[in-house]
Figure 1 (cartoon, rainbow, N blue to C red):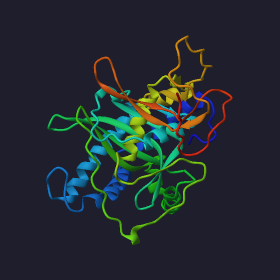
Figure 2 (figure 1 turned 135 degrees about the vertical axis):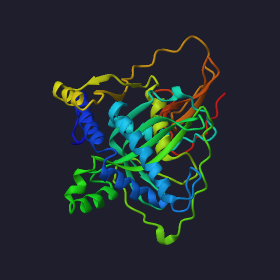
Figure 3 (figure 1 turned 30 degrees about the horizontal axis):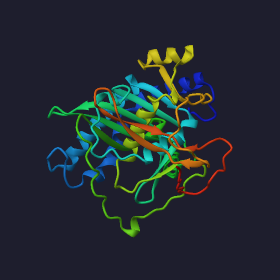
Figure 4 (figure 1 turned 180 degrees about the vertical axis):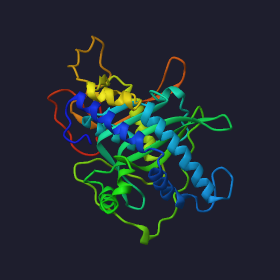
Length: 348
């Protein structure tokens, strides 16, 4: 049950339905909660974010919140599948993004609850050198007792990924315990993040010092996009998700609703799963039209590479937003192509 060798939109929708059914069945179960407790126990050894000094209570609160949020996202959230051709675009945009200080509105996300599938995973190298695959991301809009709202974002790695070192080791361990394997879904939670709604995004905390003995520089698969986390910018998962939110709303993409085939729809209805899936793809480009009669401000005599970057704009209501400008070649057709990291263009 994976996106390997899937090429048609209907197949993407069918696999997405089956994956969501299985994740909904296992989310919040006994094995899943035990896995979450083991994952987060080390993070709450000293204090609790809620103000209590009981690490076990802190872990229990976090596990309960994640279990409820993930079950909601997997069962009733909207499905998005990122076409493989879009993976490098979203990864580059996320890697170049720092949301510190930005004010995000509730309309930043396409929906309150959702699931983003990445058939071609993006690999996240942590400051310790450990590599984890990001094969799915869920988000859930949640509230806190103080009245604020935020998105709880969960990053998942595919258990059957042959290129993820963590998944390879996990499959080796699970092969000896079939009962535990049946209690886990096709994805396992890697990490969590959050983005505040209608409040400035805080700066990331100072990264903890890393002892040389803790370094484990794992190899990464060739031909895949790897983001190295330096700990000084927005969380990698949150940056990737926000980059996807912005890019899927731009004219460069098309995201048609793709209904699954009849058997998959019936399985989804029996499991009370939303079965409509949007496959986000690059829109087909059309030749550029001839420019107007106005005099061009710049006259380039060479072609050169422009790196992908975020452009800040303001809408009609005065709200700032970002648009991702994909890497491209600029300059007139037929002109010499300059190669190199940086190009200085002098024009008159």
